[in-house]
Length: 304
Ligand SMILES: [Zn+2]
Image 1 (cartoon, helix red, strand yellow):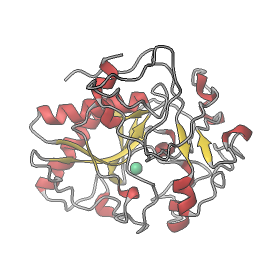
Image 2 (cartoon, rainbow, N blue to C red):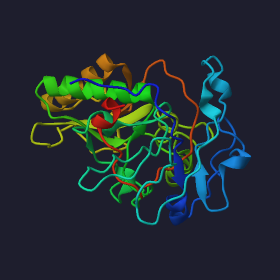
Image 3 (cartoon, rainbow, N blue to C red):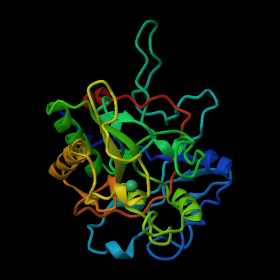
């Protein structure tokens, strides 16, 4: 399957609604302190109407990374009450004729900074646990389940997914992708154990869009037996745990090989967690919008 990554896209600044955070009672920016995170969000990143822009702070620990237009000003947009994702009118826009298929929904994020993984390959299955009560906190932390990663990480995940499919598996199921830094603070509140959760002052690679939690499914869509549930904080989750059955070892190995071949490295203590090797990105704290339609899938990329 061909992967077409966006190039030369007109930039659509992802804008994000603070509704999810407000519901959670979280104070955005509270987590952006110390360490690698900025003391406060950029002054213009928060608008009186509760809409947040992407904040791409400089990261002193990533000083050798090439300069990017990460701090370009965010595009402003309002959240349409109709549930449609708004976009700014552009030259050449016109009303569709009767019977003409409606134009595909625009992206609500900047594809040079972020990619929604399923837009590259819709056959990747999402089970974003922090959007549900089925997580170790026991309550939904995300307003809805969407999987954003940095483009280089997204492309690598798709590569691993397709390698597994070619090997006879159903592919990957994703539990967590980009995680907004304020949510990291909430996880730390519940579990202030650096072995299980990165402290928000340091930030997690999830907060940079470079880490992913996932498992493998079979052709029927069933998760393979990995020996523990996702986010089980026990030694049984360790890659090197002795006492796993041969089947579990084989299943973990299938995931490990696919991910390593695609450029990821494992985490010793969590069979489900992988980080893209050699990548460097700043922390981010935007929370995605849930109000718009699906952003279009692969055809969106190919037709432009
Ligand atoms: Zn993880």
